[in-house]
Image (tube, rainbow, N blue to C red; front, side, top):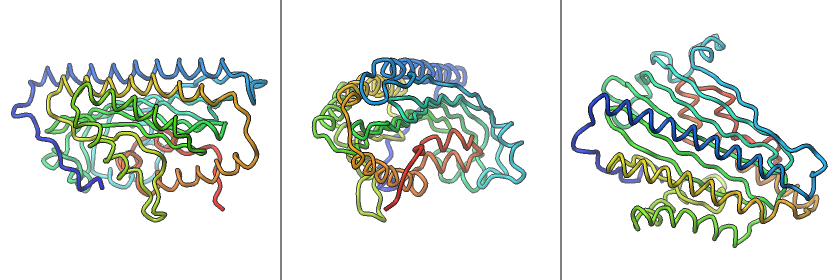
Length: 314
């Protein structure tokens, strides 16, 4: 599981402060640009629908900025884990409820400050003082058609006294399709192999172990890749993180187009809603990103955008 993963060695020397700032700006700009490309691609899919629900207007993303000062003002009591921390920055929620995408959120954020004393010990490099900076993109898509798999993707850059990248993507089909799984994994294997042949098997295993519901003894979906604490070489690690984002941008629309115009049955829709319940269980019980956001005073709407619009439990 996550705690068993061996962390990669930190660089022997830290970059100068101005270099660190420039790198932070480059990473944040990449995440924002990737957000724009993904949103445009998903809106194109909305326009292309000819099957079920094509009589509805195509969906469009609506954007909503947020900042931590406003979030803190909304709460009458300090948030758990952030009562003695100082948090600044914010982000932008991009949410679409359309005819192909029943609900999809593509969020970006840039936050900084100090972790609370009870939380900083959980973050590498934050134990002494708790100062941090973090930027990233996070995406979850829940589809109208039970034949089109749900998907999650995120990449991030975090700076404490250490500096690392993390992220990945995983596919959650409601009706499993072997070809979809092969295409999805093939795209990320190619992205990994271009940087290090050891990446794909290691990051695939990490994903399989992480996206697992122990209380049900089952995987959330068919996996993908997951990586964290990648801090070998900043330029190389950033290049790999960009390739992960680009691989997602290229492969997921292909998978959506394979199925989005096919008809489905009420029984398949019922099965989809029950499988979504598993998604809810994982995100609320086990997802580290959800816990990180809630414990550091993040925007609740952005954090919980991963929840499906409708789900059932048998």
